[in-house]
Image (cartoon, rainbow, N blue to C red):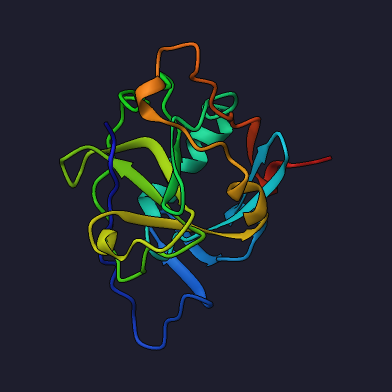
Length: 191
């Protein structure tokens, strides 16, 4: 079963999460730019996620790569716990799979509150891969243990509508999770 990851990113004097970020391979990165805006399409509507390369540059880069490969399209939310979180991104559909590339921890001081998007991981701090979760409520016990890489800026009502999943039903007829219809980087959308 996957968990999450986090990392401390040092900022220079006068830096701010609302300002421009200079990270690995990126310069003057605008956090609100289409390049850092992720569209998560569900059956009920579109969720907009502002990615946070200022907090987790390697996680954001990995998410972008997987999104552009259409990796997430059609995958399900295999673990959804009421008032806690909705987890997806596993090609196996049961919490045991991933893309095969681990990402090192990028823990930060961001809090795990409603709307925050974090990266699942195994028991190893550096064991994140492709699975992510969206917070449905506050879970401060996750602070400094998992990587925050984004926040929902629009469409949280659609996230709230993701079907609660009883993990004991995985592999049975009763198991019918909601799916990710499509994920896209806003900069790539031409519609």
